[in-house]
Length: 259
Image (cartoon, rainbow, N blue to C red; front, side, top):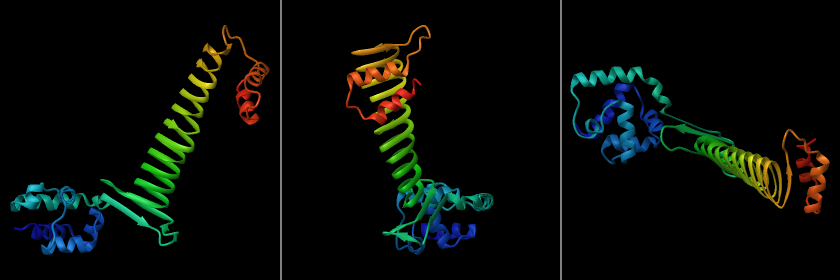
């Protein structure tokens, strides 16, 4: 039995239309029609997806006809795993803005890209992006890059919050930025267990031009030892001594730590 005949047979045993199959595999209905008529042949990744969907080996799908017993087992299994219609889910809102749908959801096995004002997908690109890889304005994802990003490894044009965060304002286990807050913080102004800064570092271990902490290294230092408290006035005087033109909101935010 040829591949085209097998594909049609498996699809009908499952009780699926060509549209259903096309949506699950991530192709057009016309592509499925061409496969079943023998006018075209799917790419390797689509063949693998079809074999997984119908619970047959790639060889059985493209080469050998399975036995009647095996076919019956496949039918039983296929009926049991009807939830695999969720192999892939895609939704696009009819409303658009500048050519982009307001909402685009594209999730499932494999690589699926969602592009929209609100985008949710394996790869998401949009104003608000949620996905394994997220790109856009406000991003939530395992790997995120945007204006404001949150996730495992994130890059932000303004702010980043994550395991590894890189942005002008970065908060994370490893934070790198102009203002960095984290277990390991590296930046112009750093606060963390280990803080490294070109200007002001505050932490248990602090290295910077101004270093404040239990173990410090810098041109100007304030040492916290034997539960000795450092006053906000001491910090304010030292900052204005070294950086008299430093933007006041940054100074006050740093001083607030010691209030």
